[in-house]
Image (cartoon, rainbow, N blue to C red; front, side, top):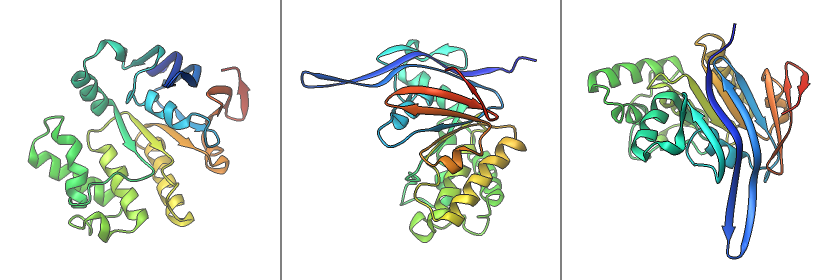
Length: 236
């Protein structure tokens, strides 16, 4: 049985121009993300992971090549149409949490749903359920400064789920956490994959974290060196 294709990167290059110099950060990336995948993109600092995350998440367009999100070439979409599609299909979890400090946990979680025209009653009901699911049912009205790093990242996980996306894109989600909080957040991602059938794309430099994923994409100097699936190596 063939699984549904969610995101495709086809010969994706990303080049930055600095004065007279050009820097190729991504060099001919080909990557498929299918429904039900759990992919860890592993690479050292400077390997192009953050740039690749922006491409996989359709946050940026390639210099050359194509990105297909939900069957649509993102280069053909207006920014507003792309933002709406992205909001429906992908939930983001960032290393820096990216919570709005003046808003409560509940307000932070409900925010993405406003742009998808979800009713206020629905937003509050769903956000409350999600925050309870991640163990923060008693912290709904706390602001980020009143929460620990691990709690803030759990709010970010809940926020990523508010629009019920099929894909969770997590960029170094444990990078700013202590080891215990990091394990808790990663366990949440595993549970979302196993029980809620979410597709997970994890960006990390931590080989121990990456090794727990069924598919590992090894990135170095903007090139996919190899792809390992269930311990077996495949050509990129």
